Amino acid sequence: MKDSELIDKVHSAVYHQCQRRGYTAPVDVLMEIGVLPKQKYEEWRFGKIPYLEQVCTCNLRKLSVVMGQIRRYAQKAGLKPSFCYYKRWGVKKKHGHRQVIPLRFSKSGRPEIERAYATHYVDSKRIEQLKKEAQDGHMD
Image (cartoon, rainbow, N blue to C red; front, side, top):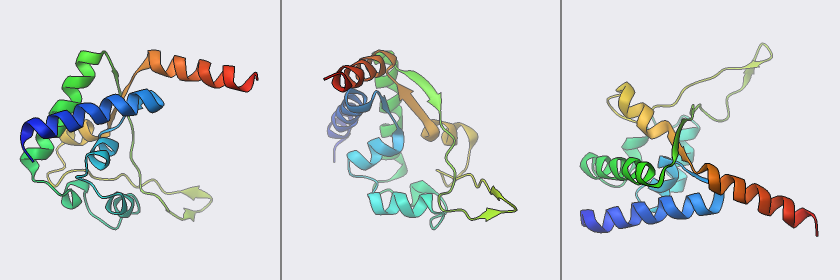
């Protein structure tokens, strides 16, 4: 896939996610554009895969293009960055508490790369619209 096609797919995915639910997340964009199989994402969430980049179906240069385009689109659209802590799913309780196991996104584990993958972008105005639509729908 050419970079121009990739960029169009990324922008479209970000736009549609924001319209649908008021925010976008890099992992969801990766799944929507077809470079992260849902099954592999779930295996990563359950801790069966050491880091997310390992199961993406494109090279690191293309992943870098995708991540950069998500950020650019978010800035242009006025979306608010919001850090999301990704932890392993399916962890058993120990002594009445669930152990929190953070997940890794990149092979390098560099903090700026990890933060980029974990940052969701929120469309506050759209979230307000969606809340209002939900309330209006319940009044019928």
